[in-house]
Image (cartoon, rainbow, N blue to C red; front, side, top):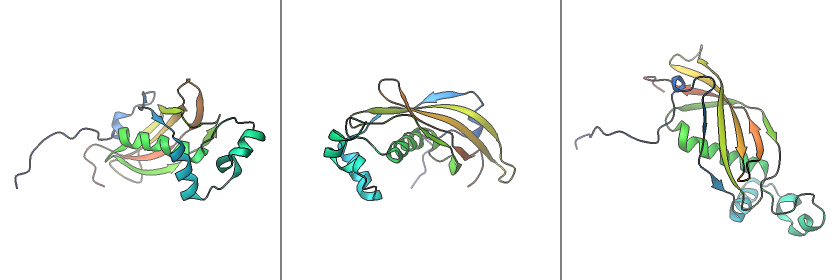
Length: 160
């Protein structure tokens, strides 16, 4: 079989493509009831805040079906992997996370990123360390989470 030389779209950024100050955002993703039910089921987060509608209606300060913060963070990472790290993201090394507000069933989130740090790796030639500030934003423009991951990212021509 003959190998065709054709461009592949959807591949991630190399660390050299991420200068400090660069900004970009992902597409949006709506959080559905099934997402919340499946997530709490598979993670065991059986907390009344997530699985007791009577508690939510009568006792919770949050009105509506709330998504666990870990689910929202996971969706944000999924949006980023699909659009910025395919084939180039190598390791998730560290992060700080701040939850600013709830995400409810029917909310649509996207991620707005700003590159805070980008430098060559001293221990892994051909790779770079990239830190971003990732704001998870809902459809009303409200920031619901902020996290600052540090990632090891492939450079041009580097082999995994």
